[in-house]
Length: 235
Image 1 (cartoon, rainbow, N blue to C red):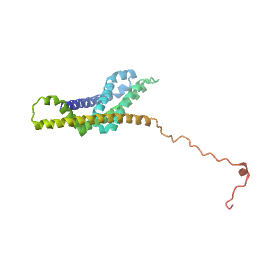
Image 2: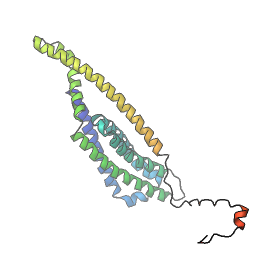
Image 3: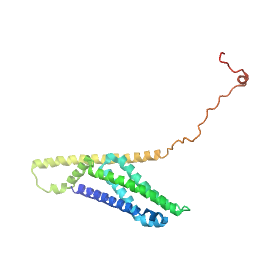
Image 4: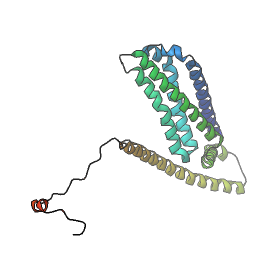
C-alpha cells in the first residue's frame, strides 16, 4: 500500500505543520500591542515568512482534501477561500500607504487575526477528512497499489486458479482506471462550474433600503375633465 501510505503521510505532515504554524502566529500576536506600533514595512518583514507558509500549506491541504473527500468539494473550496482572503487583505492593508501608517498596521493585524480563526476551522476540516476519507477513494488507492505491483506479481509462479483470479482483477482495475479518469473529468468540470457561479454571484449587489422609491406618475387628465365638477357620493 505504498501510494496510499505516502499520500496519508504527506497529508498528516501538512496537517501537523499547519497546526504548529497557527500556534506560532497566535503566540506572536499575544504581543499585539508591540506589533501595532510597528511600521507596515517592519510588520511585513516580521510576518512575511509565516504568512507565505500559511498560504502554501492551505493550498497543499486543499489538494489533499479534494482528493480524499471529493464529495465535499463545495465546503473545501469555501473554507479555503475564507482563509486565503484575509491573508490577501493583510498584505494589501500594509501596502495601502495611507497618511497614518500605524492605522494600516492595526488594520492588517485584524485581518491576520481573522486568518487565524479561519485557519483553525480549516484545520478541523482537514482532521475530519483525515479521520473519515471517502471510502471509494480509499479503495481506489488500494487497488492502485495492487496494480503498481503487477510486474512483481507476474514474475511469481502461481497455480492456474490464482492466475485466472489475477486476470480478472487486472480487467477490473482497467475498468476502475477508466472510471477514475471520468471522475477526474467530472470534478474538473464541477470546479469550473463552481468558479463560474462565484463569478456570477459576485456581480450581485444588495438593494439598498435607502434608495428612494419611484412614485407612480399620475395619469394625464384632459382639459374637459379638469373643468368638470367633482363626482359626489350619490352621483
